[in-house]
Image (tube, rainbow, N blue to C red; front, side, top):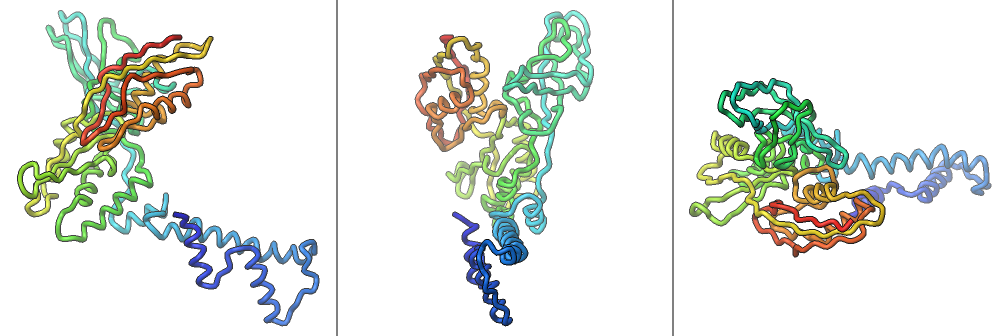
Length: 383
């Protein structure tokens, strides 16, 4: 909908001119009413050009500001940035801040005959993903006791943002290698998901959901508002299932992240928070991680002559489409929707000019209340 035209029409209905021609006509009418007529109205007249500049153009700037900034910012649907913050504050709903990801990584060593300490502030990093290296740092020291070959350590991302919620196996290098020690992150490694400063779109949804709190009963919007206050969970990434899974009046909510997989510890935290006093009377709602179905992806690709092998980059781009990273702009899979491999192929061609031909062996994925995830990618590159 062209809201600017709606606002301009509102001004017209109030008798306010909205074009330069209408402004000039109103200016002439005012002059006539005051007994002051201009005979030389040629557009080339210096006097008339001066009047247009002094009256018409500033008035048009004001009208433009009214219809594109002031009037839209009076509505939650169209407000943005600071104006949307004011709308949210009026509903006692603050914009969510940026948060650093935290999670557990697994250190593995070859020789377990002696004690070994992994010190705090050890830096773990990913291989470059579209030229970006993501880094974590251990928050506490982790110690291998004698006979132990594996130990976990809690880490925090170097920076805020959901981009650090990488999928399993992405964090696999030590900045300063330790002989005989390797590191990796599991699929459900996240303890607290990272998030960016809340976008205007997600903030609007949460403000909208707050209006439902005026009712006497808890409804989807209320629970969506509660769940989406947890780091990394956006309002659009909460799916409700009203199939009475535990009898009449019961329901489930399934949650997923923009990047990475939500862990059971986060799900438990959400359930405990709701159970601690945020349930409506008689409500029976449980929160679950969105179920997943593993996919084996087959791809044959041909590159243009005399180009470097980009198999790894193509693999990571496919990973972005399946929510493993956000380093590439790819259309991501969604529950209750169709994932199109032909669209993925088009986006790969747009990202990598080195590609000549792509051929996926998969048909489109028709997801229900579940998300497709990658089990493995069988890629053959005919360089």
